[in-house]
Length: 441
Ligand code: MEV
Image (cartoon, rainbow, N blue to C red; front, side):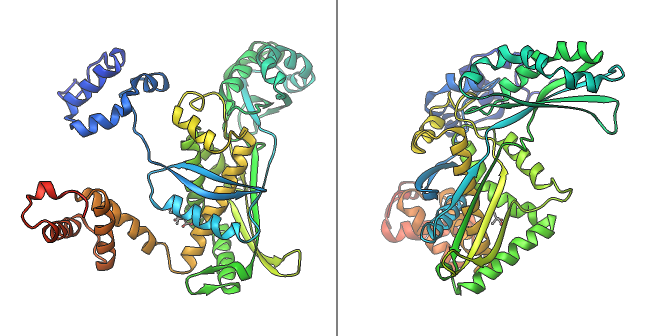
């Protein structure tokens, strides 16, 4: 295929970030506003060290889900996400649960697994590798020394032949403390390779962490008295029963479970975005965990049960592998991520995973409550209306004004928003040219 006119220069990667931005703008006709947004606060150096062939930042909006109860504390949780209803839902769910006994959380130690796959192994390789555990530990100990000083390090090893392939798999568990751990896990696996090859008589196929993280679990639960539950016209037991039924549907029906879990990840992935964590690794682990029974299922469950003082309560429960780091990777580099961690009062990785579990549960509780009562669309369309107002040209207080009118009229499109904007502008400044009327009422 020949390079057409719309192709960036072949040396694009080698240009400076400013030159790349210029080239991008020339070839793809970017507007001044688009360029300015990419060149976000002139922080091009940072984009350069965070990614290859950088052209700036796509800055996600970051908001705060205020007042998330996590055990004995209440957190203001930064969430970076493009979907307008996410923070509203998390905050709403958390508010109800704060007044209903709060959210209790737990987490395992941050143990991750790294893997080496070997082919062409000699007979008895599996046994030989198993017997050589202390030798393998000694081999990787230089890589793990610093982690060990921080209380982490080697936690176990498993060697197995794959069922369907002539391949031996060596898995090494490492407690990575406050890190997400990818670099350490990959280095440890690669460090072990020569010895593993020697012991097994085989050849390395590859050595890398597993993102599955089934041992790095975090969870959250609440026991909310039924008398505290209200959503529109649904109050108490009838609301709780419908939430339980909704969660049972997600437990039985993978088609629904995907959407149910997506709602949970609305909160958790947004927290990962805000804190500079790897959303792809996190999500891969979570969805694999949801499918661990062989069928894709809900990450949460709900039931009505007796509370400690005999009152009936709704018990909500969530558990998932939540791989969050607070050191290393983008976390330490991006000032926005650092700010988010400050707002969270500098949690360790395990505490951050517990906060994430609480956010995911609050998010899911709010979504189910809305779905089984008034539905979510009214709230979503209200938020959508503000975007339409913005796209139509409204700014400042006019956004809210036009959105309110759009919601009242029930017709959601840009043309209607633009008509309303014109109408408002004419009423307020009948003699002003249209361009000058894009200000506040
Ligand atoms: C929308 O982003 C999330 C929901 O669809 C989740 C759910 O259906 O449970 C509302």
